[in-house]
Image 1 (cartoon, rainbow, N blue to C red):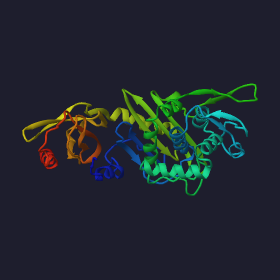
Image 2: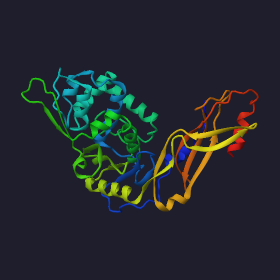
Image 3: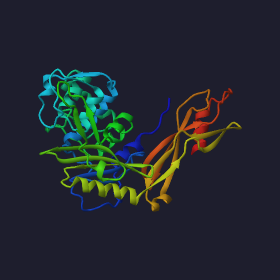
Image 4: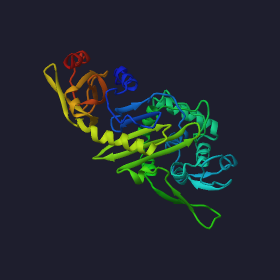
Length: 365
C-alpha cells in the first residue's frame, strides 16, 4: 500500500495565489479562476467566503445523477417534481423522460422540476438526495459547501464558496457526458401529449460570446444574485471561472478567462513514461518513471521557481514493473502545484532486499 504525506495537499487547498494580478474592477462579490488540468488557483477575490449559489447547485445534482443512473433509465415525474416553483421545463405528473433528457432540461433550461425528478430517481426522495449531495461534497473535499435542495432555491444552510464550486466543476468536467451536456447550445426533448417537443436553449450566453467556451452553468435568485460558472479552452488548455453575486457576470468572466489565457501559459512539468531518476539497490539499478503527464498554468517569471520533491512509498518485495515506488511533488515558489506517481521501470525478483525501503528512502533524499 502506498503511503504519502498529505500536508502539501492541505496547504494547496488553503493557500490562494496572492500575487496573481487580475482585473480589479470585477462586479462579483466573490470570484475564482483555476487551471482545470492541475487545479492551480490563478486568481481569487473573496474566493473562500460562504455564499448562496442559486442554480449552480445543479452541477452537483448532475454529477450525482451521472454517477448513479444509466442515461437510458426512465424517470417518472411525481406531483412534487411537477409542482416545484421557479424555472422549469414544464414537467407534468406521470410523464416519463430518460435520465439523459432530464439532464438536458436540468443544465440548459435550469429546470427546478427536473432537479427534483432526478433527485427522487437517484435517492427516492429529495431529503435522501440532499444527504447524498453533502456526503459527496465531503468526499470531494468541499468543506465549505452545504446543500439543502437539489435545485438551488434559497435556504439558510444552502451555500458554497467560489473555490469549492470551481473544484466541483473541475471534477464534473472529467465526466464526458457532463461535458457534452453543458457545452450544448440547444436541444430538443420530447413533450408527450403536445403538438410540439420541448425546445431547450442553454442559458449560458458565453457559449455564443466567448471563444472556446465549453460550459458550464448559470444561476440566479434574489438572495444569491447572479451566479455563473464557466469553462473555456484555448491552445489545449482549459480554465474554470466562478463568480457569485456578480451583476455583470458575462463581463467578469471574459476578464477572468482573458487574464488566465493571456498572463499564464501551459507548461509541461512531467511526461508519462519519463525517466525521472535511477536508484541503485545492492548493485541493481532500477529506474523511476512518471506515471502521467502533468501540466500547469505558469507565468514566465515563475519557471525558475519550480521545485520537485520525491517521497518513497511503502511497499514490499517482490517489485514488479509498473509498481508505484514513490511520489513526486511539484511546487512553484513554495506553492503546491500537484504530483505524479513514480513507477518501477522493471521488476526485481531477487531475494535479499529486506532493507529495500531504507535504501530507496536514502537514494531519494
